[in-house]
Length: 198
Image (cartoon, rainbow, N blue to C red):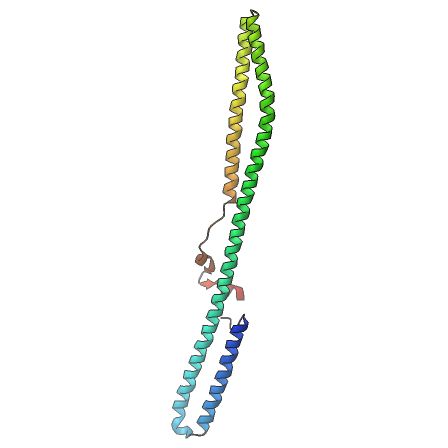
């Protein structure tokens, strides 16, 4: 057990207790020397023992109160750090989500414009061929354009699903483990105050 106080208030309490113990001990010795020592020695021994027990209990109370204050400060600091980590993880997750959405939107806008022009042109060519009596070639062209449009739509859906899975995996890796404050402070019968002293 650490008997060194960490605060000025605890120091004053220890100093007051030590001075009071010395004063009572001097008073007890002075009184014992002015009485019949052979007859009253058990009384003075009992008084000295009682005073020693009371002072030991007083010092123990000071140490326990000081330890409790230290553990409370450490617990509060850990709570603040845990909240900062949660906030930072949430901000990073939101930033990553926004960035991924922005990149995907930019990429899909470029692809959708190019794809729309290509597929629209191919449909137009197919319809023109059908009007020009190239029925088989026009139907083949229309079928190819429809397949290309369907392929691009399926690919866009797959990319969204892959991005969602990736974001879910990143979110799982950013999750923070919640710990009960008392369980974190006491390990194997030792409190955080004991670990701080070593």
